Length: 137
Ligand code: 5GP
Ligand code: ZN
Image (tube, rainbow, N blue to C red):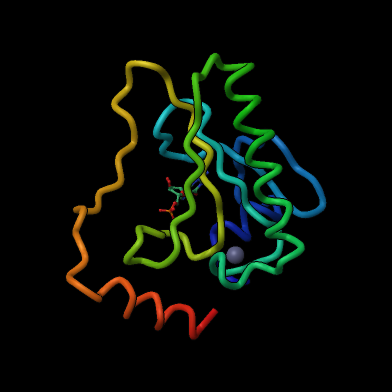
Protein backbone atom coordinates (compact mmCIF):
# COMPACT_ATOMS: atom_id res chain seq x y z
CA UNK A 1 0.00 0.00 0.00
CA UNK A 2 1.31 3.46 -0.94
CA UNK A 3 2.45 5.71 1.89
CA UNK A 4 2.24 2.94 4.48
CA UNK A 5 5.37 3.13 6.59
CA UNK A 6 5.26 -0.54 7.61
CA UNK A 7 4.77 -1.68 3.98
CA UNK A 8 7.90 0.33 3.21
CA UNK A 9 9.76 -1.29 6.11
CA UNK A 10 8.52 -4.74 5.06
CA UNK A 11 9.74 -4.31 1.48
CA UNK A 12 13.03 -2.71 2.50
CA UNK A 13 12.30 0.82 1.17
CA UNK A 14 12.85 2.15 4.69
CA UNK A 15 15.77 0.72 6.65
CA UNK A 16 15.12 -1.08 9.91
CA UNK A 17 17.02 -3.22 12.37
CA UNK A 18 15.74 -6.63 11.36
CA UNK A 19 15.98 -9.63 13.67
CA UNK A 20 13.88 -12.13 11.70
CA UNK A 21 12.40 -12.47 8.23
CA UNK A 22 10.48 -15.12 6.33
CA UNK A 23 8.00 -15.18 3.42
CA UNK A 24 5.19 -13.74 5.56
CA UNK A 25 6.81 -11.47 8.16
CA UNK A 26 9.58 -9.07 8.96
CA UNK A 27 10.42 -8.63 12.66
CA UNK A 28 12.19 -5.33 13.35
CA UNK A 29 13.17 -3.16 16.29
CA UNK A 30 10.68 -0.47 17.27
CA UNK A 31 12.21 2.95 16.57
CA UNK A 32 11.17 4.15 20.05
CA UNK A 33 11.56 1.05 22.21
CA UNK A 34 9.88 0.52 25.57
CA UNK A 35 13.06 -1.44 26.36
CA UNK A 36 16.09 -2.31 24.20
CA UNK A 37 15.20 -5.23 21.95
CA UNK A 38 11.51 -4.22 21.62
CA UNK A 39 10.41 -6.00 18.42
CA UNK A 40 7.55 -5.38 16.01
CA UNK A 41 6.27 -8.35 14.00
CA UNK A 42 5.09 -6.89 10.69
CA UNK A 43 3.27 -8.97 8.06
CA UNK A 44 4.65 -8.30 4.59
CA UNK A 45 1.20 -8.13 3.00
CA UNK A 46 -0.72 -5.03 4.08
CA UNK A 47 -3.56 -5.54 6.55
CA UNK A 48 -4.83 -2.47 8.39
CA UNK A 49 -5.40 -4.27 11.65
CA UNK A 50 -6.14 -7.66 13.21
CA UNK A 51 -9.67 -7.71 11.76
CA UNK A 52 -8.23 -7.52 8.22
CA UNK A 53 -5.47 -10.07 8.75
CA UNK A 54 -6.00 -13.30 6.76
CA UNK A 55 -6.55 -16.26 9.10
CA UNK A 56 -3.57 -18.19 7.76
CA UNK A 57 -1.29 -15.24 8.52
CA UNK A 58 -2.90 -14.63 11.91
CA UNK A 59 -2.30 -18.28 12.86
CA UNK A 60 1.44 -17.75 12.45
CA UNK A 61 1.67 -14.62 14.61
CA UNK A 62 1.49 -16.17 18.09
CA UNK A 63 4.06 -18.92 17.42
CA UNK A 64 6.43 -16.26 16.07
CA UNK A 65 5.73 -13.98 19.04
CA UNK A 66 6.56 -16.85 21.40
CA UNK A 67 9.76 -17.56 19.51
CA UNK A 68 10.88 -13.93 19.63
CA UNK A 69 9.92 -13.55 23.30
CA UNK A 70 11.85 -16.71 24.17
CA UNK A 71 14.88 -15.31 22.31
CA UNK A 72 14.58 -12.05 24.28
CA UNK A 73 14.65 -14.06 27.50
CA UNK A 74 17.54 -16.28 26.45
CA UNK A 75 19.67 -13.75 24.57
CA UNK A 76 18.92 -10.54 26.47
CA UNK A 77 18.23 -11.98 29.92
CA UNK A 78 14.67 -10.70 29.98
CA UNK A 79 12.52 -12.20 32.74
CA UNK A 80 9.36 -12.01 30.64
CA UNK A 81 7.81 -10.12 27.76
CA UNK A 82 4.66 -8.26 26.84
CA UNK A 83 2.87 -9.14 23.62
CA UNK A 84 0.74 -6.18 22.60
CA UNK A 85 -1.64 -5.61 19.68
CA UNK A 86 -3.41 -2.26 19.47
CA UNK A 87 -6.44 -2.06 17.19
CA UNK A 88 -7.89 1.32 16.26
CA UNK A 89 -6.87 4.82 17.27
CA UNK A 90 -9.01 4.62 20.40
CA UNK A 91 -6.92 1.65 21.49
CA UNK A 92 -3.61 3.37 20.78
CA UNK A 93 -2.88 2.09 17.27
CA UNK A 94 -0.75 4.76 15.59
CA UNK A 95 0.45 2.84 12.51
CA UNK A 96 -2.45 1.45 10.52
CA UNK A 97 -0.67 -1.67 9.30
CA UNK A 98 -1.14 -4.64 11.65
CA UNK A 99 1.77 -5.31 13.95
CA UNK A 100 2.51 -7.08 17.21
CA UNK A 101 4.81 -5.61 19.84
CA UNK A 102 7.10 -8.00 21.71
CA UNK A 103 8.62 -6.09 24.63
CA UNK A 104 11.28 -7.67 26.85
CA UNK A 105 10.59 -7.10 30.55
CA UNK A 106 12.75 -7.31 33.67
CA UNK A 107 12.13 -8.04 37.33
CA UNK A 108 11.94 -4.83 39.34
CA UNK A 109 10.41 -2.82 36.49
CA UNK A 110 6.97 -1.38 37.00
CA UNK A 111 4.73 -3.94 35.30
CA UNK A 112 2.81 -2.76 32.29
CA UNK A 113 -0.62 -1.91 33.60
CA UNK A 114 -3.56 -1.34 31.33
CA UNK A 115 -4.61 2.29 31.41
CA UNK A 116 -8.28 1.48 31.82
CA UNK A 117 -10.23 2.32 34.95
CA UNK A 118 -11.88 -0.80 36.32
CA UNK A 119 -15.65 -0.45 36.37
CA UNK A 120 -18.48 -2.70 37.52
CA UNK A 121 -21.74 -3.90 35.97
CA UNK A 122 -25.15 -2.83 37.19
CA UNK A 123 -27.75 -5.57 37.79
CA UNK A 124 -28.52 -7.34 34.49
CA UNK A 125 -26.09 -5.20 32.50
CA UNK A 126 -23.47 -7.93 31.93
CA UNK A 127 -26.09 -10.33 30.59
CA UNK A 128 -27.60 -7.68 28.27
CA UNK A 129 -24.18 -6.77 26.84
CA UNK A 130 -23.20 -10.44 26.52
CA UNK A 131 -26.43 -11.10 24.58
CA UNK A 132 -25.54 -8.34 22.08
CA UNK A 133 -22.06 -9.79 21.60
CA UNK A 134 -23.31 -13.38 21.25
CA UNK A 135 -25.62 -12.29 18.48
CA UNK A 136 -22.62 -11.12 16.42
CA UNK A 137 -20.39 -14.12 17.14
P1 5GP B 1 1.17 1.28 17.69
O1 5GP B 1 1.01 2.50 18.55
O2 5GP B 1 0.53 1.48 16.32
O3 5GP B 1 0.75 0.02 18.36
O4 5GP B 1 2.73 1.13 17.48
C1 5GP B 1 3.43 1.71 16.44
C2 5GP B 1 4.89 1.60 16.79
O5 5GP B 1 5.65 1.83 15.62
C3 5GP B 1 5.36 2.63 17.83
O6 5GP B 1 5.83 1.95 18.98
C4 5GP B 1 6.45 3.40 17.10
O7 5GP B 1 7.55 3.70 17.93
C5 5GP B 1 6.83 2.48 15.96
N1 5GP B 1 7.29 3.16 14.76
C6 5GP B 1 6.72 4.24 14.16
N2 5GP B 1 7.40 4.57 13.06
C7 5GP B 1 8.41 3.68 12.93
C8 5GP B 1 9.46 3.52 11.98
O8 5GP B 1 9.62 4.28 11.01
N3 5GP B 1 10.32 2.48 12.17
C9 5GP B 1 10.19 1.62 13.23
N4 5GP B 1 11.08 0.62 13.35
N5 5GP B 1 9.21 1.75 14.16
C10 5GP B 1 8.33 2.78 14.01
ZN1 ZN C 1 1.04 -1.40 5.03
